[in-house]
Length: 213
Image 1 (spheres, one colour):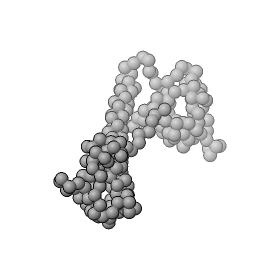
Image 2 (cartoon, rainbow, N blue to C red; image 1 turned 180 degrees about the vertical axis):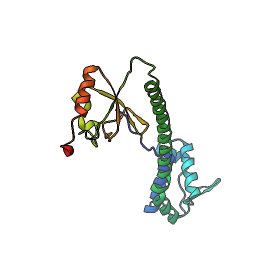
Image 3 (spheres, rainbow, N blue to C red; image 1 turned 90 degrees about the vertical axis):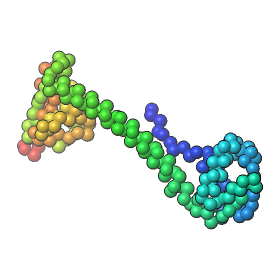
Image 4 (tube, rainbow, N blue to C red; image 1 turned 30 degrees about the horizontal axis):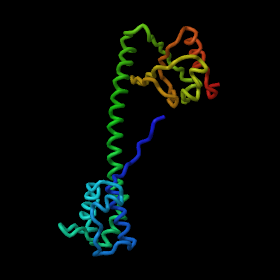
């Protein structure tokens, strides 16, 4: 089972939000001096560097002021409120964009692999380079009952034993069409199977649609 990727919020960001929430709730007042980095690192069970990053973020947002040699002072209740309110729409959005970028890169690689595989199969069909795959092309009658119905709905393999490796439609080849692929008038179906399978498939698709009866 494929594990879904989750958005991971950095620890320093969680700490920054927690301190901002404490300011908003009144647990920390404007002008109050925060504990030192070593104390905060013990309280939050993180490294002093993580505390430094959290404080730098709050300083950039004008929530606190970092005074060299005199510590960190709570600067603004209003900016703390703004920081907390913007948290979801700002920082988490950034994380979501990173995840989306990662997924798009994965999809691009997968699309390329699919294209390469499709090209190989198309070449095999076009030039008949392999005796292992020798597809038979069957044109669907315009009055066939399969028109406008999907492969899954018709249960092609169950009813005929045929494996559909492609559909030729208006000079385009659809390789390995899935169960939701619906047939259209004029489709040329590429199937593989022994002579009995081909006979069963021919008999199956030549059944007329009720609208022609």
